[in-house]
Structures are given as C-alpha cells and as structure tokens.
Image (cartoon, helix red, strand yellow):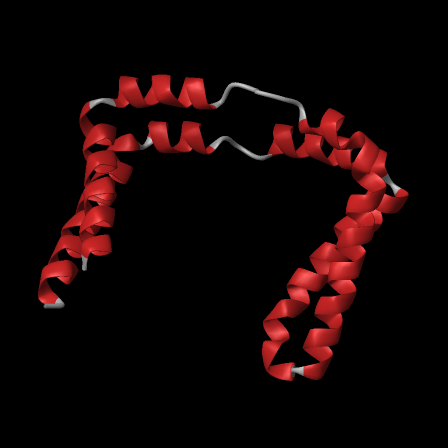
Amino acid sequence: MGYLITIGVIVLVFGLSLLFTPNALGKIGEISNRIILYLDEKLQPAKLWIGLVLIAVAAWLLYVVAKYPELNYLNAVWIISLFFGLLFVFLPNWLAALSNVSNRIVFSTDEVVMGSRKIFGIILLIISIYIFYAAYAVR
C-alpha cells in the first residue's frame, strides 16, 4: 500500500504543477532537453558488434517462440531486433538518416502536454484521487 501512496503523491504533485506552475515545468523541460553527448559518435566503432548481438537475440527469441507457442507476443520483439540488427550490420549510415527523419516528423511530447496542460493536469488529479481511494480501500 505504501507504493500506491507514493505514486499517488507523485501524480498529485505533477498534476498540480501542470495546473498552477507551468513556467517552472517549462524551465525543467529546457534543462532536461539539453544534449549531453552524441550517442552516434560514441557507438560508431561498436555498430557491427551491436548489430551482431541484436541478430543473436533475434535468433534466440525466434527459437523461444518456436519452442513455446504461448509466447507468440515475442514475435514482434524478435522481428524488430532482427530488423535493427541487420541495419546495424549492413546499413549503419541509414540509422543516422532514420534518426534525422524521425526527429523532424515525430512531434515533441513537451509541446503537446504544455499545449493542453490544464486537461493533463485535471486528468492527473483524477488519477491521483483514484490511487488514494484504491490505496485506502484495499485495507
């Protein structure tokens, strides 16, 4: 029950901060969105090994899914792992291009949340009330 109360307090604080202190959240978002390091540069020497590991993981997951059909939800995981493993091994430069395209196409969640901050704040408050109710009704 203690974890429910902790989660409820966290959700309540974020809901209230969305409603009453959006500027402070905006400043926290600006600090959090700073680029610390460029991961592409750090991973460049290891892209082949990363690809080989992803392909090995995909093969192992395929074996597990074939042996245990009730784990069919892992099909998506091994397909994605195989796809990115093959990209890392054979087309490593395409990963940078895919990253650039997705950065332009995919919208920022910060903009969406801050654009409708009152709605998200009210939803978080309702969720926190429900969590508190569930925490004390479970007793």
